[in-house]
Image (tube, rainbow, N blue to C red):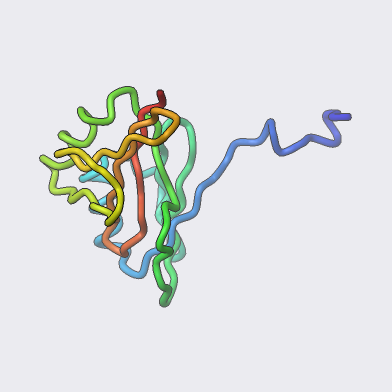
Length: 131
């Protein structure tokens, strides 16, 4: 049972975390290339917002990027989004064994259309248009 004194996480806003070793490159990428508004920064993280979700790009000394998607956006038109981002210098990933179109878009069994790209630290990000 949820009460005001005992809230559940389903009512709480999500904050996403993305690691970076280079604040300057990350700020330029997330703010200028992706167009996310910078809400603030300190010695530990850059804080952006996308669709009502806060994204903390947290400074770390070192890390190995995960080989899978760590952050993604649902978009109304994936090919339009890919085209816009490509014009801003984003390079879309190609994966062996996956049939991707000229935009780098893969169609999932559900019919969702997905394209992947990396941030300056090698974190895998995606855009998806639901079926």
